[in-house]
Image 1 (cartoon, protein in one colour):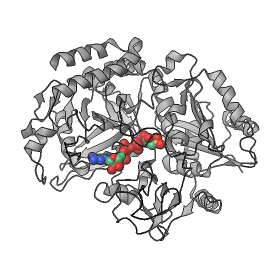
Image 2 (cartoon, rainbow, N blue to C red; image 1 turned 90 degrees about the vertical axis):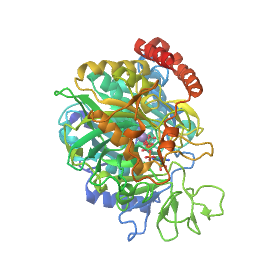
Image 3 (cartoon, protein in one colour; image 1 turned 30 degrees about the horizontal axis):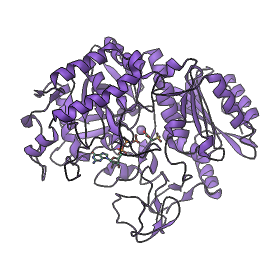
Image 4 (cartoon, rainbow, N blue to C red; image 1 turned 90 degrees about the horizontal axis):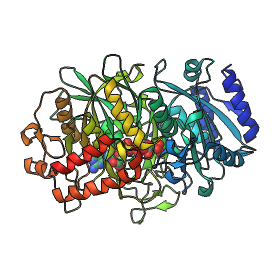
Length: 585
Ligand code: GTP
Ligand code: SPV
Ligand code: MN
């Protein structure tokens, strides 16, 4: 099959990898509809995908991953830089040469009897100075079809690349999906990724977490920009003014939902536009503002909890052209998950293909089950999403999943304090990564699993960037997940988060008051719009904003744990901010 490129750097690298992996066939993908149709059919024939009910889910498919392979594996994820210091204390590190050797042993002959797909892809709008080209070689049709949704795949990539050598070299081999032989390795100095032994999401869709965040953050430090685990949204007021906001929440903590928010009925004329739901690349613009693009072209979203009330835009987005992974399958060829609009089916197959009924003890869908859907399907897709320059960011929000201690919303006093807020963020672990769920861990800027270099240097990079931004975005902290003594969420969340967003953009535009607390600026009750809320009044709001000094003393101590790990790399500004916070408390 024709390669669609004459780029000799690409051709010779692919040839080399073919010699190593020894596939029976090499297929160069072009990302076209005809190709997709052929590959979907082939995936169905091979049992990799199941075609869903074409009337209820047009052009949509169902996939079950290996039950041992349902989330990112952080303990098997490596940053391979020549010195351990570059990777820093929060990453697994390995010296590149020895890791290359180990991977060569695993990948030699790994595609015998199989097909190698060559997937060219572009991260970012065509023509954007920030856009990056990658080529992923994979023996997984599931990966090819997901990459086609998640990235701009095909000619757009070759065009952006021209005859340059500046592309990410990605190799993915399924192997036997044995967790013991699973490795996700990054070689930032070579702009290369090798992922073996997994077939799931962030481990294998190499444009996403591997390139757009780990390699991206490394390049961003070198080149003067930021690669962040952030959604980007635009708030349009009834008079048509647009304010853009970026927000970092850890995995499975609400980015997709926030990015697609539908304002409550009381917000007549207000509209939220989605620019991105997971990743932002941000750079200081010539006009002194911070600008952001979404490098992706689709959503790899958490299925459980998604329904017409929590996220109607997501429901519309996944009504067609979608791949569902590890959800439950109903007898009529439709899908279901916990928190779906439809009631639990009287019978279905669970995410492992086992018969399931409402009496079953286990969940029908895996808690980290996902949909892969093109952003073009999103009714709230921002027009600016294809703009090569991106959008100007007026506010940055850091959020975590915290049952206690953290108020609903709070604004940093200034940039350095905001960086400290982001750096000390804590959140309960979720099913998006393998391991225990529900334990509070420090997850600086929601980047703990995704920062491709030394976390202390990353804080320094954030502080340094301030000098290049004349009009810096204001920085905020939010927590949708505070609970009462009865274990229930104190805040209704979802569309009601508009109320928080409104205060945030009013602050960014300088049109609303605030109240100084030890943590930062918070809305006075009269500044926070509760109009039209049912069963929620100003005393509930004050409860949600309550700062408990005892809890905050514990919080500062638990922040110290991360600071101790990073100590010799930590910017002194972070220590000063800690001292100031302690003094205020
Ligand atoms: P990743 O794709 O893993 O990066 O996750 P994400 O940050 O995009 O999270 P997502 O929006 O998919 O939400 C994860 C889970 O949190 C889903 O089950 C949502 O229903 C739930 N969730 C999202 N927003 C809210 C909220 O405001 N309140 C509550 N209580 N739950 C929420
Ligand atoms: C996350 O875990 O933050 C995700 C899903 O967005 S994955 O692509 O698997 O990383
Ligand atoms: Mn994510």
